[in-house]
Image (cartoon, rainbow, N blue to C red; front, side, top):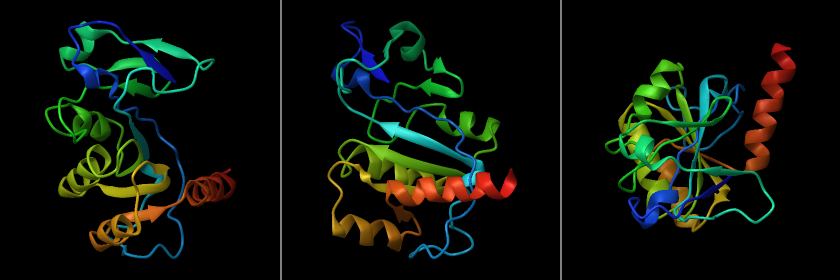
Length: 179
């Protein structure tokens, strides 16, 4: 999904978005750093994609124009079935947004986080998710700025650190077993 805006009312990070949708899969086996209280519940999960720049995705992909009035008023902009954009004023997707409320409405217990610049927005979002009693997954190979130190830090907080292939495998396993 490509986000583009030239509206000057939005600050430079206006292209920041948090898109959520249910993925529907079971817990992955043998995830280090988590226990039965923090292990991901992919059957009740939402993918949060955080990107900090306008025109982030390559040309030729589907575009979606931002609605600054809607976003700056704190509302979600629907861009597809179960896919929404939320404006976030600071690093964490939970800070002064309605993200937690929207996740609760959908009975989401696990957030799967991917996006730009791990040391800032994704990290703040992952930490804030656990502070709100959500289970959290950091998708290592879908987070720019990810390091071995980040892996240890997040796992130490009970956040599952998985690669995209592991997340996809967990989803496929659940879909096959519930089919």
